[in-house]
Image (cartoon, rainbow, N blue to C red; front, side, top):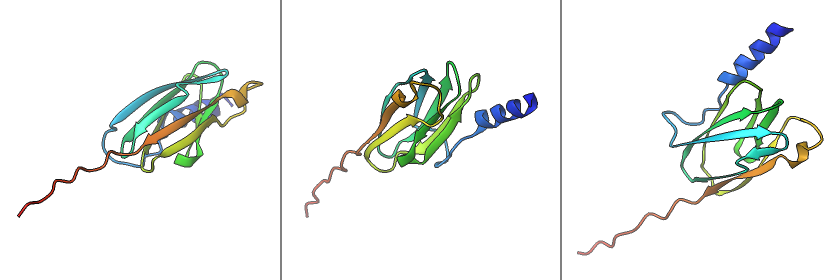
Length: 126
């Protein structure tokens, strides 16, 4: 049983949801704890290669952002790395996806992908 828990923790620590190659443009550290996600509002620009470094300070939690296809467990004592490409502007609800106690429903937030600035057009004169 102990070996199974250790292996599960190792798999969680190494698990990533890569949707891009190369290094991230933006790294965001997150803490999950009873009954909060810190920060609970993450703002990233469209097109950014984002890496979330997620830890918990108490019990098992789960980081879920369904609109961005994110749903990963976060184990005590381990770091969960989630990678995604911020493709489509919008506000994406974030929540804890593992029932963690009476305040579980309060563990919410959002990921906001802001639109890229328009490409400036320079008139061509002949």
